[in-house]
Length: 126
Length: 110
Image 1 (spheres, rainbow over the protein chains, first blue to last red):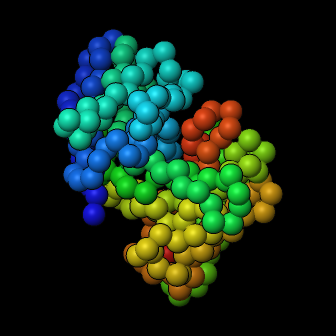
Image 2: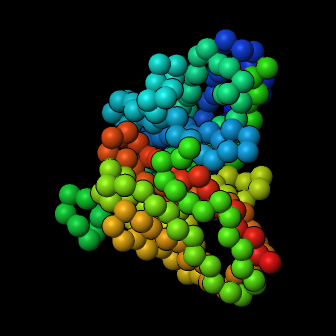
């Protein structure tokens, strides 16, 4: 059973860099995709970005200029870096395993979903 | 404003059945499978449905999913008070190359 744990500062000053790490309990981090998602207070979930087993990344266009996601395979961890933060970046931040599974019902069709989530970490920008 | 549209709230009595709708477009629900998540207060989101209607191991068969065109639904039968929480639909968006979320639906078991 894989579990994920987010860690990092709970308080970040405006204009500074938010840095979080997600520790993966077991298994190879290299064989899956990994995502960051956040939930601002009173709002819904928002995808931040993901990193693939190849090391390639995709980011939400609304955050792309400020986001970097990286992976440290030797430590089984992946990280989020968000620069130039403002109060609007105050949120609970979740890491998740992002799956791409082939459909058994359609050729060349894949299911995308997040099957394992961390419990989340609250980050306040103030 | 979320890309996928869900009702903000639904409510139903214990032991009854409730459905939560999720509306999108051709670039997301219309062309990709939908997943559903349960988010209980203070807990990590939990995958309930993937591939439109597939349940992961360990998820109760009280939860079921369906999809037609650019809309999807989550049905929960035999409601328990423990089901109270927020439910989100998600689908990959071809324009984004990543997932888009519904705004979430708060379920109240009366």
